[in-house]
Amino acid sequence: MFASVPTESTHRPTLDPLGASVSADAAAPQAIDVIALGWVDNAGITRVKTIPYGRLDAAATHGVGFSPVFDVFLADDSITAGTLVGGPTGDLRLIPDLAALRPLAAQPGWAWAPGDRYTQDGVAYAGCQRTFARRMTARAGLRGLSLRMGFEVEWITGTEDPAGRFLPAFHKAAYGMTRVVRVSGQLRELVRALAAQHVSVLQVHPEYAAGQLEVSVAPEDPVGAADTTILVRETIRAVAARHGHTVSFAPCVLPGEVGNGAHLHFSPWRDGTNLCHGGEGPQGLTHEGEAFLAGVLRELPALLAIGAPGAASHLRLEPDRWAGVYHCWGLENREAALRLVTGMTGERQHTANAELKCFDATANPYLVVGTVIAAGLAGIEDGLRLPTEVPGDPSAVAGVPRLPDSPAAALAALEASEVLREALGETLFDAITAVRRAEIARAAEMTPAEIAAEARRLY
Image (cartoon, rainbow, N blue to C red):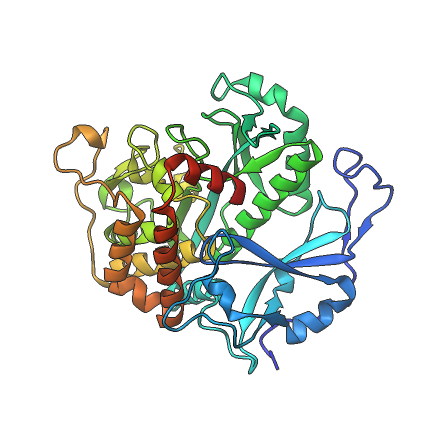
């Protein structure tokens, strides 16, 4: 039925032992017994269906049942409805991508595979976020372009007291070696687990806020980058749990404090050439690379409803926190929403990229990569050029606008974006906007402290 879906799984995957630091009873390679088939909903929650290993062939061929109502789940598991999506009827099939199947090093006997959704007739489902990301990647390919993308992952680690209050694992000093000492065993296990899962780690280090850490991974194709950031987050959770810690990727853990971002780094390429370097445009951008970035910048108010979608996101989006709240761009400007990163002399042809600093981990990463591609391609098609660069603190420059300052304002920008509506298609657009409206209504009854506390628990 699903002719385009790989169905071979004749070899039982095994997990090379990493020793007692990851698996205390790993005396031999760990056979996979259970597989989590994952997807991310429009509220940014990673959800799964799990199957015994012996069902993998059947799942890869015919999928597992899946209600379309999951597209209108809210983060707290309440359910809304759109014009096209919602209600108790209907069924889909969730098909694991076997090429992305990974044993879970911190959960012996388990593996994870991202899934794509199809109708029962074997047609790609119009509301599937991962399929959307793949479709936008293919759209770029038809224009001779490829994209390299990667997400930074920031999180808070610690414990909860009996009253449910979060206690960070460490406090001062920001970026300090003292923080590494406090969780060095945990970080070592994390790096080893990610390596066992074939994730290329570039950096792992303490961050600014109390209990905050960050890991950066190597860039990949857009769908692979989204897959990897989900795998990284769940690996962080599993490793931390082995040490008695809970973690949160929420954009705001405590109101008034610096929160967690999920910055997207990206670069468009043509014929093996990085379009963010070696050109005659501003700061060495090629004209095509400049147009791609200009398209992203033009759509950024609408993209905020995708990449920083909720009330907790806007508790993070404050000036002077390097959260990228200003609708501008600049070379190595960490207060601009769009930061151009050139890299070191001698490697810029490989490393030059752009960074979107305003996004966070409440976003569905497949929607993020797909909409950024759509916005950039529209910029190329329209021959856009970047506005004047902002070289310093945007708050000190007259006329530099803020991005939308509320979820409602960002949603209005999304609903007005013809570029993103066309790219997403009516089914996916309807589901996303229905979830956003319902989340906005729910948050209206909550205080900032309640919003932050819920986000910490859910994300």
